[in-house]
Image 1 (cartoon, one colour):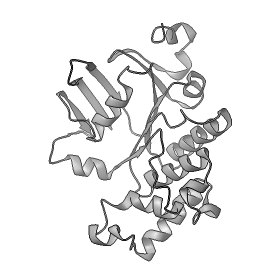
Image 2 (cartoon, one colour; image 1 turned 30 degrees about the vertical axis):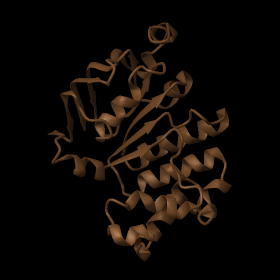
Image 3 (cartoon, one colour; image 1 turned 60 degrees about the vertical axis):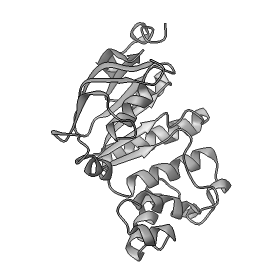
Length: 240
């Protein structure tokens, strides 16, 4: 599904965000990446979908090397969930979900949210999947944090991706809402066979919902283990 080979990224000023990362993710896996702030987790995810330019190394998506030419196809098949939701506050939940189709719709029509009946039905189905069908026409700023993140998930899955990238999706949520979001991501992973790579700080959630846990520190992978094999001593390696 995804294979990353010797990926490196240095930002202006000399900060080495990634130092030769190698990682393979199989189709249908749920992978959590743990690591302190500044460990390179966000840069790694953003490199996969082209939000960060690759400095050196290669990323393969469905066995094909990601190049400038192939990147648009990768982005069509990839959904992204953000820590701060990235919703438009004065738009309804359904219109926020429909923005997930902007790359596949007529740019002129999408500027005015003139989506087809079929696209609107798909948005409603996505909202139903995340349990928010009854909030479809509420403005985003009328929703709770957990509900806003569920709208963000619906926006990510409306285009039926094969890969879902979640960057700290529960960082700003209370424990109950965080557990709900993680259980929803796991449901989507299993029900639709969507591969999930999720950046987290919460060790307990990573252990509960992941097939595999990757530990990242200072741009390097320190461990890559099945979730059941990751104990508190392993975790201490990246939070020392």
